[in-house]
Image (cartoon, rainbow, N blue to C red; front, side, top):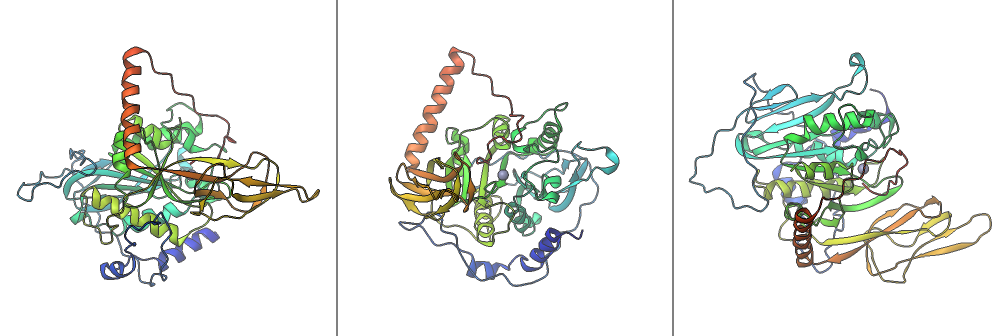
Length: 443
Ligand SMILES: [Zn+2]
């Protein structure tokens, strides 16, 4: 426990204790919608150093049983105040039982190495004393993506299970091996987020995926998988969601003003596997790997707070008022030659078709080329300045879509799907790539 990262995390813990409700009211409300409101990161003074709140008392032992609470539909009306809420059953998870109204730390052990040296992965559970949905948060599926770890900590330790409708399950560091090594990958160099839902008898990555999926994700009604940009790329905080799925569209509207990027499902990704199993899921991207970014963490945590409020799980201590998300479709622009990349734009900039986004220059021959925006849009992700090879994805430009367009497209996709299912067999899903060097510009 002596690595610089551990020291950093401990420092973060001491610096980032939850704020009191009043401090949050003062500091953390985001501005209401304005013409050019798309996600500028809020900035505010550092949080005061105060002791970290301890979790509530661990539960007493009890009879294992799953909560039969049904999920609230996204945007559903709250229950009538006169209705007597159904009693909540204890939650059976990972071989333990969590009583209603309590917080507990459980452990998940993926079948990765031989049992004697297996390292259990901590799983934080807040089991409310009122009926409601089960929301799961996973972070560091890629071990070098740190912002989500801090978001899970902030959210979980400000929950009050005695005043929570439903259950929140947080896995702060899914890929513990990668986290320890400062690496995106599992110890076998595979990308875990290409192997879901996994296979009991598959590759090492497939087994880890299977174990997480069946022991935890299958218990969730909703899942938010927290990521950052990969491999020296940074992302404006955004949700990645399949906007051809109406349930996912409805869910994605619950995060306040956070940008939503249409991202078609790709085989092997956790959110895709979850949606196929009936767990409504999105990915949240914020910032870049191998760093802790206060603004990105704060922005993401606020979006999660807003989600809990909108799912009627609790009254948020800070919330995002009226703004609705802005929807985008997007594409990467790639370098046409190798060399030194120097960008001329920043995250969240609006760009015009034909605008120079940056240059790539061969440092030996002094020959270079410009990277040109192919259409009007906004920079939602970009590579940091670095040496790149030809074909390297440098700038992700989002093209705004109206909520109506998104809704219409989702409905059309559902109709198309119904037609396909009536007429012919749907195409089999592509198998997960075995290549550990598969493209990494996706989540
Ligand atoms: Zn990731």
